[in-house]
Length: 473
Ligand code: NDP
Image (cartoon, helix red, strand yellow):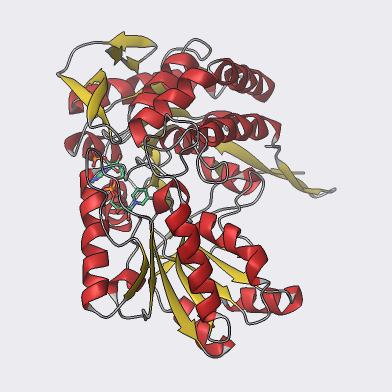
C-alpha cells in the first residue's frame, strides 16, 4: 500500500494519524496519508506567508518558467496521476465519450500551460503634461484553496496555478475523500517551486475552518456545495478575505422543436451522465418541446440502458460508481421520492447490487418543476426530462432556480438560440453543447452558484489587487 505525504514548507510531514482512502468501485483501501490538524494549518500559512516575500518579488518570467516546468513534470507523470485519479474518484480511465481520468489529467496540464501564456501587465491610463497614471496589478498574499472530490486534480490546478502565476503563495486543502492526486501534485510541484510556495493540509471540519478563518490568509478560492460556500463566506468576513466561490449548479437544457434530435442525443447524454453526473456543470434537468418529447425520452433511455458501468480501471468502462456513500444515498433517495411523486422511470432507477457505490444510469419522464429531482442538484447519474409547450414557458422554468451556473439551448436556428441565451440566468450558456468550458473563457455562477470567475485573464485577475499610482507633474 502506498503512503502519500503532506508537504509543508517544502518538507514532508509525517506526524498525525494515518488515514486511508478507499476506491469507491471496490471498497478497498488503496492508499494512506497523514491527517492534518489545525496546528498544521498554522505552520502551512506561516510558511506560505514567509515564502510570499520572495515569490512575489520574482520577475513574472521566472514564475512562468516554473509553471511551464511544472506542466512538463505533470506530463511525464501522467500514467501515475491517471491511475490515482481513477482509484480515488472511481472515474473511468477513458470514460463516457472520453470524459475520464485521462481527460482530467490532460486538462490539468493544458490549463497549467495556458495560464503560463496569459498577460498580467499594468494599465497605463494617462501620460500627459499633467500626470502619469498607471494601474498596477499586485498579488494578494496567501491564498487558501479548498477543493471537492469530483474532479480533484483538475480543480486543484484551476485554483493553484493562476494563484501562483499572479505571485501569491498557496495552502491547499483537498477533500479527505480524494486527497491522493493532490498530495502527489503538491509533492511533484515542490521539486520545482521554492519551499513554502505551495503547501497542502488534509483534514476534516476543523482544518477547513482553521484555514478559511486564518488571519494571514488573504483570499479563499473554493469549489463545492452552496451550503459550505456560505459557511466559508462567514469565515472570510473576519478579515475581509477576497473570495472566489464556484458552488453548486442545477443546469437546465432546453431542446427546441427544430433541434436535430438524432444528432444531439449523444451530446445530451454525455452532458448529463459524464462522471456519473458528478460535475457542477453537468446537464441536470432537460426541458424538451412537446412535439419531440417522446422521441428524445426514448432515445436517451435506450442510450442509458446501453452504458457500460463498472470499475473505471477497465478500459472500456464508460461510467464508474458514485464517489461516496453520502452521494449514493442522496441519489437513491431523490429517485425514490421522484417515483413517489409520479415520475415515470424510462431507464434505471435502482442501485446496482454488489460491491461499490454503483447506481443504474436513470432517465425519468413526466417530471415537473416543484419535484425535488428537478429543483435540487442531484449530482448523480439521473436525468429528469420535463415537457414544455412554448419557449417563454421553457425560459421561465429554466430560470426558476436559486442556481445559475450553466445552461444550454439545442436548436437548428442558432440566431433564435442566441436570443434565448440572453434571457437565461446563468454564468455560461452553450448552444448545441453543454459544459463546454475552455481555458480562455470565464466560468462562474450567478445567483447561488457562486461569486467571481475562473479561467483566462478574467480568472487570473481574481488573484491580484489593483493599485492606482499617479505621478502629478
Ligand atoms: P462540500 O461543499 O461540503 O465539500 C467540499 C470541500 O469543502 C471539501 O474539501 C470539504 O472538506 C470542505 N469543507 C466542508 N466544510 C468546510 C468548512 N466549513 N470550511 C472549509 N472547508 C470546508 O461538498 P460535499 O462533499 O459535502 O458534497 C455535498 C454536495 O455538494 C454534493 O451533493 C453536490 O451537490 C455539491 N458539490 C458540488 C461540487 C461542485 O463542483 N460545485 C463539488 C462537490 C460537491 P471537509 O468536509 O472534510 O471539511
